[in-house]
Length: 486
Image (cartoon, rainbow, N blue to C red; front, side, top):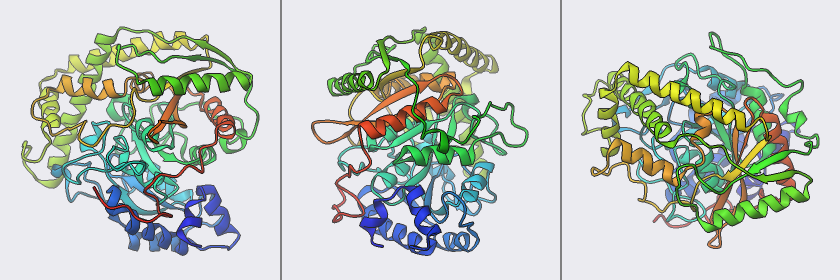
């Protein structure tokens, strides 16, 4: 098998080759490392290569596991993997190495995935681009002058370029869906509580963040969700599960749905005409597939919701920086923190407990308002972000002339459709359904009722067949000649 063949398969496809003895996990690992060597100088997505750990994991892999022997990367944020660097995208967290797996990492391993390296993240994940000072800018494989999105931009760039078919990602305001949109991938944010965060995190970002992955196919997303879903020991809640695995149920034809669609933002943020056109074209396809499609959107009080977002994020950044400093014995200092993130740290440190409680209450009010909207609709369709992927440097977290509030508003002006569903906890997916005239991916976001990932995945599978995306390939790809770094 060569790199071109390797990169043509999704995760399930590679695992099937392992099961049939057509390829070994060791060969797949070598191909992933060859891919890193070939394209990472251009995209700057992979931080650490973990060849020795991968070799040890291959010795123990269960070849009956659904992703047996499939190379895998994890983002250096939140998820804990034994013996693996975890800088959180910050100079203050540099050289942190995690001593033990989190529950989710253990489930990734049991699924057969072979951890081969770590990927970049913006500092503490608080950016819609991935350009941390500690790593430098991560670049979009479709066009190196653009960002692959954030905060899971390193993982997205690695999957889009063919290094691995699946990579870990997490989402506290769009950080799975934004890079999936920018990089031409499938990015599911599961329902709050669907995927375990313990034992080291209870409810990340006070319940607005969740862990999962970016992939190239719906079936990889569905089967991976089967492998990692469910509460961990001591979890606050337990969600209902489907009567059969997602990987099996996505093969069933989705029932006719009532789908709302919008290209308008609650905040009044600008939406690019090409993103609007992509929604209109998808609406037409949905009608042809037999769904009822209605222009409508949920409405809520924007100013209080924005303040809640600022307060929850900055309070948590304050705590994350304090924790990172304690782990590395570094002084909490702007010498180690990017300028806008330092402003967030200062803002968060001035908040009172009552401020955080009020922010959580605001999100609960918004959740109930939005839940009422979804009484009438199965799905809400919108652009994932409001524009085409940002150019490198447009979302600069090291800007000293921006406040914590301004920084938050800048992020969610760029990505005005994603953050709402972190607050409500609903499942939301970005699908690579369109492309700009300049060849950049345009993702469309579909959001379902609380705990109803199944409808999203079944509709995603239907659209994957009606509007195929799997064979699209960016300019920087393991099967192509390497592009010079910009």
